[in-house]
Length: 195
Image (cartoon, rainbow, N blue to C red; front, side, top):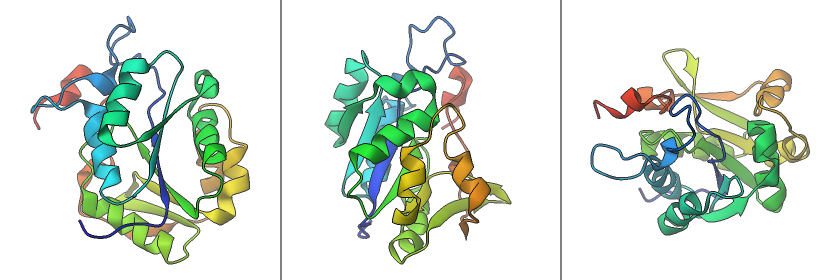
């Protein structure tokens, strides 16, 4: 990829992943893909192909995860608000990067998104669109692009609804992508198979 977005990448990596491992012993983001790469490392590297700066948010105590993200090239933030959910985690990241021109928000458990799909979201965002989302066969996926106009609302998010409130008040610029991976995450151990 040769495109470099002016937006700051945010990689949300603070969830507990209890469906993947109810015992909490194995973090799904550190699970290995078929080639041995940790899930979150590949998610981060793909986002970094488009966003020159990526801030990854993890929960306190996730030092091993932070090390992997640092190795990938991310700046890591430990958010004490992570226990309150994805919205609070996203708010912490936006507050930490409040000078950004916009944000490309991706999830740490979505390692298969094609860089071209990330670029397809970044380009209209960089061109001034306020809210951008990829769509595959009628379903909205990730990453999502947020323009500077949404900064204040993003900084006040809380709970586990993520940025649904933003989508409730604004219509996204939709980018049709031929990439089913914008919908594909790692939820259960079996999701790691077949790739």
